[in-house]
Length: 347
Image (cartoon, rainbow, N blue to C red; front, side, top):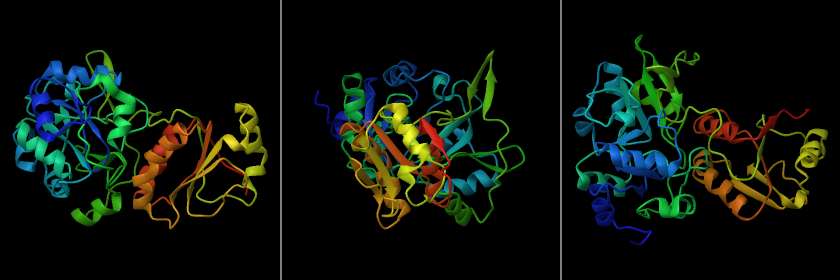
């Protein structure tokens, strides 16, 4: 079978219990029939993902979600108005979905994606698709079909090529707790500000108390994307914990000691830039997330830029934080968790 599949070929493979790379507006997913435990296990095996980490289930519309989940509060109903879109909602499930999809937890993760190919595939399959990101566990999420093939290759039946993802970041994961408070478990492709505008309600910024639950004798995360180290490029990523950098930052003691620690000359370093300020002279590559400081453009390019830097052989990647607003919060989360080192530079 060709690594690039048509919707019809992908639908047939999924019905036969195979696993397939699929495009969504966020990142590419690795899909299996969520009702078929044997098929879902193949997803965990291909990704080398722990079985204790729950998956996200994808549906073509809210009505199909309601056949597998309960909306137990008006706020959950309001949040579903953001579908189709880059929002994953934790809901009480009806136990029809394979238990390894939700890791035996009382709530499962549900999403209606906003991508015409994925929606058509879901309608053809007539069953929900469990689909985490189509990468090896902990590695960069793929935003193109070629990135899926590079990481998973012969481990999967193939991938539908839906072009580059329009959002470029995984979905935002939301839970409504017993106090009717909205908890952001993972920042992602829909911002807090956009959610607040849609539901006309402020979201608490208080730390979330329970990110893990005990099932039997084991603790497990209540949703995807909660690992402290994740989304990692193959070359070390160094992140400066500031949106701005001091003049001459590349000559500071901290940067020079980092270069010495990794024994890497500047010609083998890549700088990931938001805007055209703070550009180091003589470095091997400047990878622009967005010269015009557009957060949406930057989110589309984040994972692909990191991937390109690694494929081109750059041994160290440096980046600074983005504005802590809109999609900037999600990108900062990814940079922080993907980094090998992070520090503040003297002002």
